[in-house]
Length: 270
Image 1 (cartoon, one colour):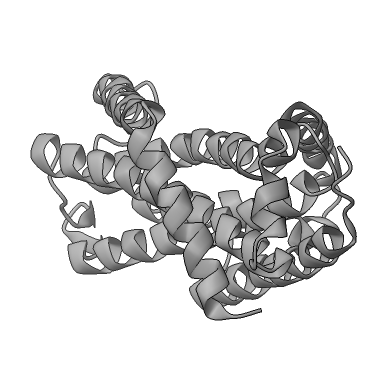
Image 2: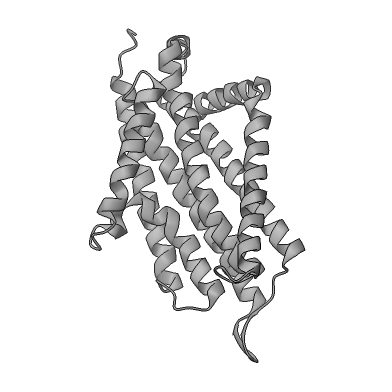
């Protein structure tokens, strides 16, 4: 495979995105839902229904919910990106031309990963801006004692956003792998949704929890929410960083490897 194969596929995906109405509709919906989510949680926090009416708490708590939407969009977009090509048979001319299958697959993965990253970072930007304007980012105080400084909280918030994004890219890789097994996006989506229903059951067993991809998606923002409330943290920060980077990274590498092998062996008789 040559690097230009990946670049060709990415360029083709960019041209497709420019022509699709969903390119504007999806970010608009995500931005709107992010704002509504934040405002709803701020309303509840101001009335002491839960949490704290602080910018750091509301940012992390809101993004903890928005990552579920970003994950769902990652699954749907990736399945249509890959399985959708098989369903429409548009993969045939791509593979007949001098574009390697590995380059095609990696180009697809990188393209959809960029879209997933943009969606999640847009949600984070909307939430953080609203928190800054409406609540401000102040240190966490216990009477006159500073529990966490604003700079420490801000640095950790930025860190967990990037850790969560890393886990989302791993989810995209797993979805891309599964999408290569199906000739219709619906089958791939159904399998992943079914798997997502099993994961909460597996997470009950503590020995399994560190190996589940869902843990890497949820734990960074849960850690930040706990820090913003001033309660004990589930993990040491160093441990959380290592677990997320290594764990999600292993899922990503294995999934891409299997996905490439699956694409190499796939028949195009459909």
